[in-house]
Length: 201
Image (cartoon, rainbow, N blue to C red; front, top):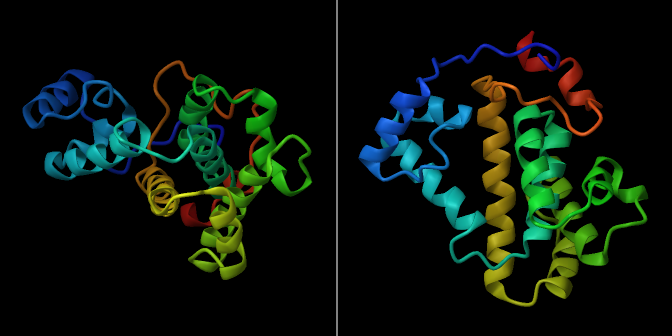
């Protein structure tokens, strides 16, 4: 799956049909051509709800620092082996000002020397959620140190949950990259989770 274009388990709409359905429900035009929404728009009501949450966490009234959010997303994409999540947000992370070296540090963040204490706290919260199902008490104390407001802390939990959900749906629905987009930027290195995913056996 990592080297081949996956075949979606639910048929993708054409870009034109996705844009038409998106317009009918008021979904952001920027989302409609994406492969994931070309599948989600098979269920327009659900696609609108998912899109609203996504746009809220990315652009509309969000309070969590974009740097921290993108590090969370990239860590989730790497650990779960979600090529689509990693590849889409590689560009988003750079757009929000992270360097390539900072993004690549999420592959082995515990050994990285170019991450801040706040970076490390949210990455630990992400790993806790993946491994334990929730953020541990010790990690939460670190979060309270680096995220000053209750709003930021709530958004942190929702961000981890949202992009964990996206990883799950991208993998389960076998969403392909958009045409012409190269896998696993910038160097094509593939995480262990993507080399031999057990759910494809």
